[in-house]
Length: 110
Image (tube, rainbow, N blue to C red; front, side):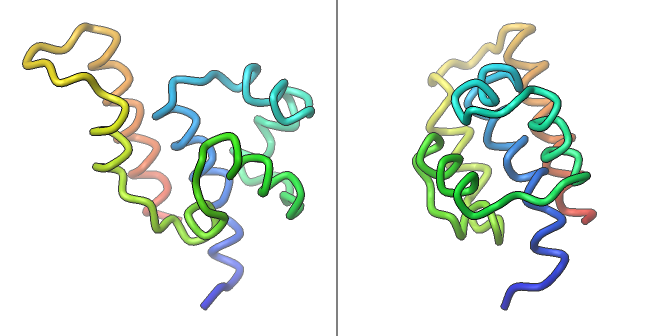
């Protein structure tokens, strides 16, 4: 079931999805019709997110609301679907993978 901890991790899950899709905060904020500062506060868990905004996030990332609320999406599936099948990774890809790992680690600790 859902509890307060589910709400606390929403910002981290949005940040993880954003990072996996290689979208920066400013771009996502613009697509959602909010300021970059508000987007930063959402990702940091400093503000609550209303249902309307969650629906827009889910639609932009083509996922279910439950994926954002409960974090039921698979990180492996997201990485596989966004990565090209190459054996060697560029410096940018390595940086992105490390960032994804750090975000997912922080999300699990919540």
